[in-house]
Amino acid sequence: MRPPRNLLVLFGVVTLLPAAMLAVLGVRLLQQDRALAEQRRSEMLEHAADRAVRVLEQEVNALARRLQGGFAPSEVPDGAVYALVRAGRIDALPAGRAPYYPDVPGAKEPPAAPFEALETLEFRKQDLGSALEIADKLSASSDALIRAGALLRQARLLRKMGRADEALEAYRKLGAIASAAIGGMPADLVGLRGRCAVLEEQSRTQELRREAGAIAAGLRAGRWRLNRASFLHVAGQVAAWSGEEVRADAEGEAMAAALEWLHQNAGTDEARAAGVHWQSPVAILWTPAAGSTRALLAGPRYLEAHWLAEIRKAAAPARAYLAGWGGTPPAGLRKVQRPAADTGLPWTLVVTEPGEAGWGELPGQRRLLLVGLGALLVLIAAVSYLIYRSITREMAVARLQSDFVAAVSHEFRTPLTSLRQFQDLLADEEALPAEKRRTYREAQARATDRLQRLVEALLDFGRMEAGRRPYRFERLDAGVLAQDVTEEFRREVAGHGFAVECSVNGESCPVSADSEALSRALWNLLDNAAKYSGESCRIDVGVERAGGVVRLQVRDYGLGVPAGERKRIFDKFVRGEAARALGIKGSGIGLAMVKHIVAAHGGRVEMAGGAGRGSVFTITLPVRE
Image (cartoon, rainbow, N blue to C red):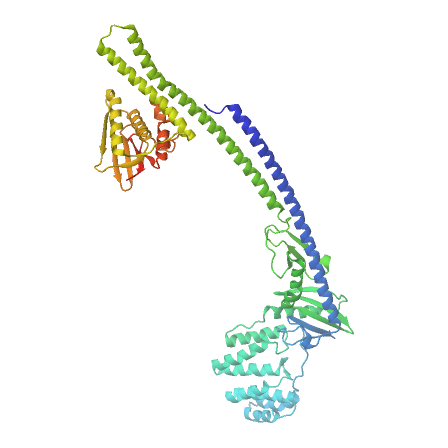
């Protein structure tokens, strides 16, 4: 009996249609929620960008107002340079934050007149000694310019005369004069370079590197006001002497480029901010004041500490960037831009999502919706599964009951048919010999006993299922009981060629049991072994005592039980496929009754073996001394 097709169709319509409608409704709700979250993200980004722009405008305006009063050197913020442009000259405070400058003020050079006689003796007459005497006298002059020119020529003459140590001393003295210029270069820088040239000629490498290192440190610190060409020239010489490249850091290069830009554009009337980029960004704010221009050059450190930190705080939890520096927005995130043309600020402001899952969504709404939808679908699936299981189980029970009725009817038909046949023979032939009449009556008695056992088995099984079967426990020997039941069963199947053997170990096997119930359980196992013995007609019964238990085993060598049927073999009304295929008689309650009886005795029943290898059923009961 299979479930009717219309019942399955009705079941599918009743369960699957609401589930499908619920799924469609859930998808539409999720789509609406996603659209709402997208709109919310866009609004949050717009608001974050507006907040960041306002904060940046406030920072720039505050700095512009502060610029109108000017800055003292100690007041210039870290990471910035204060510049004052007057009459084409640009002064930057504090000194040293830019490696070179767009203009170099014309420092005074030594006059030529005092050195005419010296140079005549040196170059025309090649009288180096006389020229050196004049240089020695001029180097003692109180005029710093004359002294600087004399020391330079003195050092040169000493180098020509091979007096290197004295030349180094002359250059050292020249390096102490910072108020003069020689050939457009600061006199002290010329002295340091002269010492390096002498040390190079003398191959005094360690001293040369030390002197070159001093020049490199001065270049990096902005000790001398040089233009870009002079800076690069001196840096190249130092690199050749020390083997180490001398370059300004990125911020210093950016400051120098910003000063150059300011020097060229200081005449404009605009008093706002403009962006300059030179390896690193610099924001320039300037304002005209009484024929001059005051400006503040804000470098990366200042911008990071003040502007960028403030706009990031204002845009939180979104992320804010200034285009061109301050990081690159990750790809794939929603972003909002505020161009420089709209804000009047130096850079384009970019605000992006934080990249966090669920940002901009309504708190918990989507999760609650998903959980609710999932719970409903799981509930529908669980209920559908339970209903389907119930239907299939009821159908299976109905099929088993149908098989049981058919099997019991067949079992009852056999003894009833025998009784009727022998009754007809006795009635039709009144002059039967006494021997044959006795044989017929014995056959009738066996059929009656079989019919009685069937009826009693059914009644007992019904009482067992209802829990009303009374048991009268007594102390008995399981070995003796097994021998008696085996002997009785041997007489029952004597005409069918079965060899039934019972072996009991030498020890007594005392148990507490209902003699009738335990005998019925053992009989059912023997009957089951005979039915499924196949071509083998051998059945072995064994009883043994092992520790605190007694085992009763019934072994056959017939068809066996397939692995797929072992779990259900002790269920009521269940019969194996072999029984149906071979037409083996049975009601399907024999093993179920064995299970009930053994459980009532506090024991257990187990089955071993496999298909084609016979079966071994073992009843295990506790020993009772």
